[in-house]
Length: 116
Image (cartoon, rainbow, N blue to C red; front, side, top):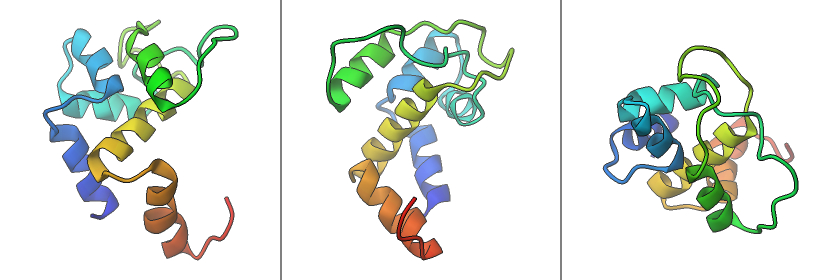
Protein backbone atom coordinates (compact mmCIF):
# COMPACT_ATOMS: atom_id res chain seq x y z
CA UNK A 1 0.00 0.00 0.00
CA UNK A 2 1.57 3.34 -0.97
CA UNK A 3 1.28 6.51 1.12
CA UNK A 4 -1.46 8.04 -1.04
CA UNK A 5 -3.58 4.90 -0.91
CA UNK A 6 -3.03 4.78 2.85
CA UNK A 7 -4.35 8.32 3.21
CA UNK A 8 -7.32 7.60 0.95
CA UNK A 9 -8.13 4.49 2.94
CA UNK A 10 -7.88 6.44 6.18
CA UNK A 11 -10.15 9.15 4.86
CA UNK A 12 -12.92 6.74 3.88
CA UNK A 13 -12.50 4.03 6.51
CA UNK A 14 -15.78 3.45 8.32
CA UNK A 15 -14.19 2.92 11.73
CA UNK A 16 -13.12 6.44 12.67
CA UNK A 17 -9.74 6.94 14.26
CA UNK A 18 -9.40 9.17 17.29
CA UNK A 19 -8.82 12.46 15.44
CA UNK A 20 -11.70 11.76 13.09
CA UNK A 21 -14.05 11.26 16.05
CA UNK A 22 -13.00 14.65 17.37
CA UNK A 23 -13.65 16.31 14.03
CA UNK A 24 -16.96 14.48 13.56
CA UNK A 25 -18.13 16.20 16.75
CA UNK A 26 -17.45 19.47 14.92
CA UNK A 27 -19.51 18.35 11.92
CA UNK A 28 -16.59 17.66 9.55
CA UNK A 29 -16.40 14.77 7.09
CA UNK A 30 -13.73 12.10 7.48
CA UNK A 31 -11.69 13.62 4.65
CA UNK A 32 -11.93 17.10 6.19
CA UNK A 33 -10.95 15.67 9.56
CA UNK A 34 -7.89 13.98 8.11
CA UNK A 35 -6.91 17.15 6.23
CA UNK A 36 -7.26 19.26 9.39
CA UNK A 37 -5.13 16.81 11.34
CA UNK A 38 -2.40 16.72 8.67
CA UNK A 39 -2.27 20.52 8.45
CA UNK A 40 -2.39 21.25 12.19
CA UNK A 41 -5.68 23.07 11.82
CA UNK A 42 -7.81 20.59 13.79
CA UNK A 43 -7.95 22.96 16.76
CA UNK A 44 -6.21 20.55 19.13
CA UNK A 45 -3.95 21.96 21.81
CA UNK A 46 -0.19 21.36 21.62
CA UNK A 47 -0.04 18.51 24.14
CA UNK A 48 -1.78 16.90 27.09
CA UNK A 49 -1.67 19.09 30.19
CA UNK A 50 0.57 18.17 33.08
CA UNK A 51 1.74 14.74 34.06
CA UNK A 52 -0.78 12.13 33.02
CA UNK A 53 -0.40 8.71 34.57
CA UNK A 54 -0.65 6.63 31.39
CA UNK A 55 1.43 4.26 29.36
CA UNK A 56 1.03 2.78 25.92
CA UNK A 57 -0.91 3.38 22.77
CA UNK A 58 -4.36 2.42 24.05
CA UNK A 59 -4.17 4.91 26.91
CA UNK A 60 -2.87 7.67 24.63
CA UNK A 61 -5.81 7.13 22.30
CA UNK A 62 -8.25 7.05 25.23
CA UNK A 63 -6.96 10.45 26.40
CA UNK A 64 -6.99 11.78 22.85
CA UNK A 65 -10.62 10.80 22.27
CA UNK A 66 -11.57 12.71 25.42
CA UNK A 67 -9.97 15.90 24.05
CA UNK A 68 -12.02 18.88 22.95
CA UNK A 69 -10.63 21.30 20.35
CA UNK A 70 -9.36 24.59 21.81
CA UNK A 71 -10.17 26.40 18.57
CA UNK A 72 -12.78 25.71 15.89
CA UNK A 73 -11.33 23.33 13.27
CA UNK A 74 -9.88 25.27 10.36
CA UNK A 75 -9.80 28.59 12.20
CA UNK A 76 -6.11 28.61 13.11
CA UNK A 77 -2.94 26.63 12.71
CA UNK A 78 -1.71 25.25 15.99
CA UNK A 79 1.23 22.84 16.05
CA UNK A 80 0.03 19.88 18.06
CA UNK A 81 1.69 16.68 19.21
CA UNK A 82 -1.85 15.38 19.65
CA UNK A 83 -2.26 15.56 15.87
CA UNK A 84 0.73 13.23 15.49
CA UNK A 85 -0.68 10.78 18.03
CA UNK A 86 -3.90 10.77 16.00
CA UNK A 87 -2.08 10.37 12.68
CA UNK A 88 -0.01 7.51 14.06
CA UNK A 89 -3.19 5.78 15.13
CA UNK A 90 -4.70 6.26 11.66
CA UNK A 91 -1.60 4.76 10.01
CA UNK A 92 -1.63 1.74 12.32
CA UNK A 93 -5.36 1.07 11.91
CA UNK A 94 -5.40 1.43 8.15
CA UNK A 95 -2.11 -0.32 7.38
CA UNK A 96 -2.46 -3.03 10.00
CA UNK A 97 1.22 -2.49 10.86
CA UNK A 98 2.85 -0.96 13.93
CA UNK A 99 3.79 2.65 13.18
CA UNK A 100 7.54 2.04 13.50
CA UNK A 101 7.43 -0.83 11.01
CA UNK A 102 5.27 1.15 8.56
CA UNK A 103 7.62 4.14 8.75
CA UNK A 104 10.67 1.95 8.22
CA UNK A 105 9.23 0.06 5.23
CA UNK A 106 7.38 2.88 3.45
CA UNK A 107 9.26 6.05 4.35
CA UNK A 108 12.78 5.47 5.65
CA UNK A 109 13.88 2.46 3.54
CA UNK A 110 12.80 3.98 0.18
CA UNK A 111 14.84 7.08 1.08
CA UNK A 112 17.78 4.88 2.08
CA UNK A 113 17.64 6.36 5.59
CA UNK A 114 19.06 4.23 8.36
CA UNK A 115 18.34 6.67 11.20
CA UNK A 116 15.84 9.44 11.73
